[in-house]
Image 1 (tube, one colour):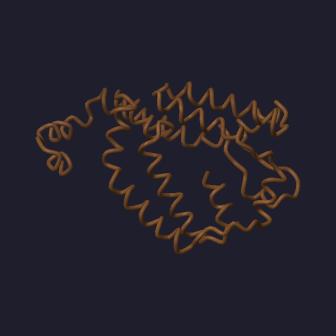
Image 2 (cartoon, rainbow, N blue to C red):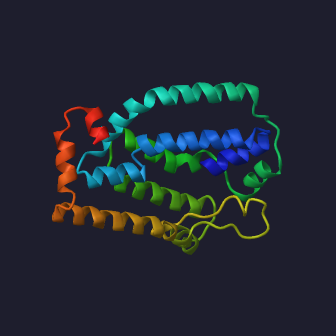
Image 3 (cartoon, rainbow, N blue to C red):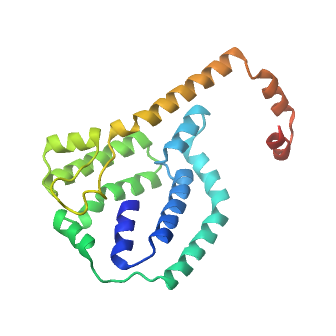
Length: 216
């Protein structure tokens, strides 16, 4: 989504820096409040808590910053309006891909299933299957290509100017992050079972207020 918004900003003559700021602000909000957020899922798993109640609590603490951010970027939007004129990048997207409402189906599936609090793993699987079918039928990719994209990430062929913009992803790109999570989880288990942090834990448990816990 960030890539698409940057392309739109370039096409419409909007400041790339401001657009990047808006994207990062949205990423922070999504990382806290989206059921698709990897960090939210990791926290729920490690603390044996429910994902959706956690998200509901995080939304409460995100309301004021989100409102302020929306107001600030709305003001920027009036100062730097998006031009409707087309440039080579937007034309190249239309030339390279079959862009239509049906390509929104994977995203719509995520929104709808999230509303009904579906299990995230099932949500990702169904959305990925829908996206793969669309890639094969609408975008005319082969099954082999789709499997390669899933594992190694997407890469355009030819001399398209989009080649350096629309690329990456894939399961293999997540291996380093997965290793960090694996090692972190291992340390958590070691600390818990050896009572290595018992003294610190007792100190924290003595605190009766949020301020006291924070100081501890």
